[in-house]
Image (cartoon, rainbow, N blue to C red; front, side, top):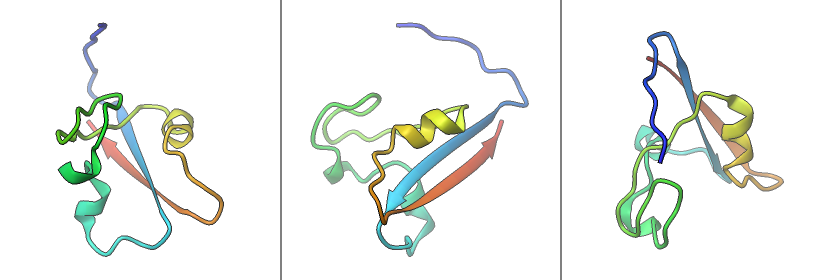
Length: 78
């Protein structure tokens, strides 16, 4: 495992794909525990974590959006 320090001024992005517009801002955070059924990059089953990246292209390529989905991109500064 590799870890690194994040310098101030870095921008992080989170992208989420939904067929319909989310009705609450909580839908833009980590998934609810019941949605995490297997091991993922950061999540264990039933134990969701918030994931963001510093490159828009990487974040968008990892969300598995399908044709017709609406993609929401969240930008956060540190």
